[in-house]
Amino acid sequence: PANFALIRTEDTLQAYQNLAANYRKSLSLKVVAITGSNGKTSTKDFTAAVLGRRFRVTKTQGNFNNHVGLPRTMLEATSQDEVAVWEIGMNHPGEVAVLAKLAAPDAAIITNVGVAHIEFMGSREAIAAEKGALAQAVGPEGTVILNADDPFSKSIAPCTSAKIVLAGTTEGTVRASEITQSANGTDFTILEGAHRCRAQLPVPGLHMVQNALLGVAAGRIFGLSLEDCAA
Image (cartoon, rainbow, N blue to C red; front, side):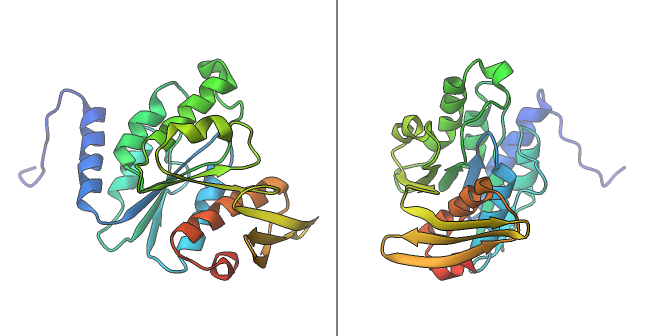
């Protein structure tokens, strides 16, 4: 059609990613990027819900978090959005670094290091190194939030010059105590220094508490009160 634009390129995927990266540069929003073997989507939703109490937030829909899904997600952001919460997935070596460069995150959350895709990575240590590429992408003015309950967080922390914040059920800057689980959900107390606040999740599971704490930590670095994060 006469009114249809056609762009010829040698590599359509690279062109698509370049388009998204340049569009991201045109936006003034802050980006929180999330990766991890498990819990990315739950943590994304918790983080977006917390930050949405103060900011206009755009987030990854579903799990569009790979080499095609992330650019698509980035291109859905608008000039009215203030914060983006984007998932970054991987199943082969080198993928996180590429996607992290596209997202150019101001903050990162690494949920955990498990065995997902270990058939392509070879070991959990290799998976940790791959996840650490997201931490490397955050500059010294940014923040990387790590799971204090995950032993691999200690090996990821030195990967970045950014500020490190730990969140976990027993240790960390943001942590939980008095956890009570039932079929109806989970009640727990969020602790940060001398501050404490009671919170409730409509789902059971200690792993969900961990994911929620990562979202609370994100809220705190963006200036929300502990009470606002727990609401």
